[in-house]
Length: 318
Image 1 (tube, rainbow, N blue to C red):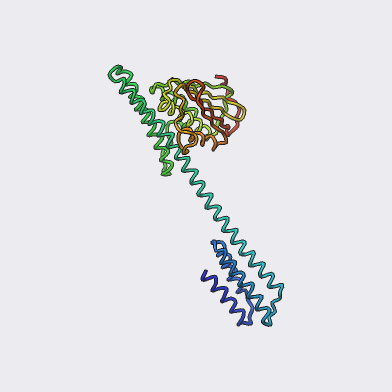
Image 2: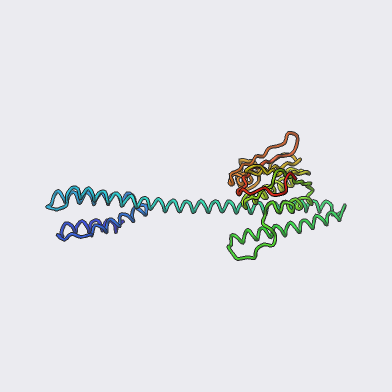
């Protein structure tokens, strides 16, 4: 600001005492642009007004070859320069806000991934550990099976957690030997729930179509979270997963015969439970609903667009 006012005053003084004309007026004009671009709108407007009024007053009180038309044109240039600075400021502010929004979205995505990875596996380990303690004296063979499931589940949790943290650290790591979470690993997910006492069945209908990576991951995570809720909160024994391939979207329906109470109310903080699954579906242009069944159990239904439209595969109505 000090430099700006100094250039305005020095330029005005020069034109008053000197008979030699020159492009010195460009100096305060450049300063005006940078002040406006940095957010000093009021100071820039005040400087521009001072310059326009000073030139106009000098034209009226002295014998100058500067005409009223020239004063008008100078005023227009000053207004245009200040406006350009404001536009520049707006573009910079927009870019900064967009960067903050992207960072916030990435934090939410990482939060959901960590919750799904850690929450599911730890919940299953907790349930299986309880089952192992219960069966240890009565049926050591079943207790041994549960302990084996705990070992496999903890290894899977560590692998997925290491992969997620590797993305955060942005380090170069070898590609994981296991496929990324998606419908291709649905059977593994079902197998991990059986030692916890859940009877899980998957039914497919319609002509299967390829899914985009985000949708494939979302379907897997919704199934994973539903299994976690059923094992940890509802006390369900039977679990049904239905995948219906329709025109333009995949419908995922999950039903259990538990107590029918959701693990997380829909209005609670996002990132966990039903609220986290709903956020995933909405982020992909779909929707998710969760309601108790008339007698017992809980029904969760998600509609997700395919993301990429491919030709139906050979397997259908299975």
